[in-house]
Image (cartoon, rainbow, N blue to C red; front, top):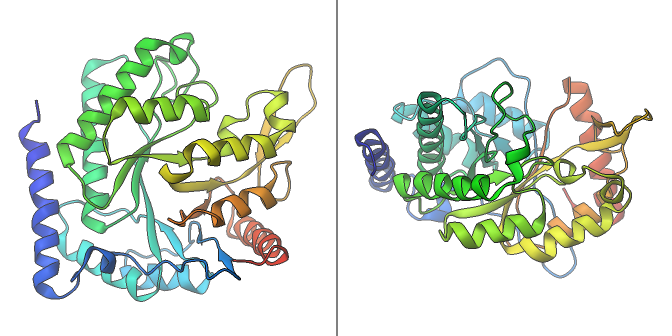
Length: 323
């Protein structure tokens, strides 16, 4: 059953779109996003994005900050679903700068052991997808959750079970059915200790959810949970794109290094400081017709992001890939 709040969110998203149409801000669904260049047979492209370190809530300032850094994709700014004026201003500002809104992140545990908190988290993600739809963002993303009672994203033996899979499928359906998005997708980020934890399990989940608005989010570093995947990241990347390619709506960019201890310890580092095959990653992203953004994340400073960006631009240039 869809609760009243969910219906109100859905109505708001539809009414907002209608208002934008009347205002001339959204004559077509394509106008809600900057045009994405397609391959002309000579040049391929990757739409790079990441955070900006600007202390402002002004949509124009935020959009310009992304453009000045050379970004063509952005994480969604913090916006209330009820703030129609700011939503309208954000759509206009980012379109004018040619910057796609890639993701609305709603990082919470959809399988929280506490029923009250679980319902609160589900409503939070429903609202996130409604916001993505209102903004014309590519997706709303969360992890499928965890049965761990102490850490919302932590490991648990049942995170790889059939019960977990079925609950994740049911949650995805509830979220999508409450919003009924047209432009935006809902997706789970893959994890190394919770489903979906492989290209096969993600594709199986896509088929089980059976909703056009359910898509794939790709963070290959989150899949590397053993030496085989670490050493054979090229093969892992090719498997991801072979099995999930048409469904991929957004990608994350970070890297992994192996800290030598008596047991496995993979550490997140900036792209170029680890061993993920980024040359293959860029080639594979640029080969997709839908041009999913590649979003830098989990770095500690603006300087770290600049170094990561410079590394990816250099790798892209060496392969004829425009960033």
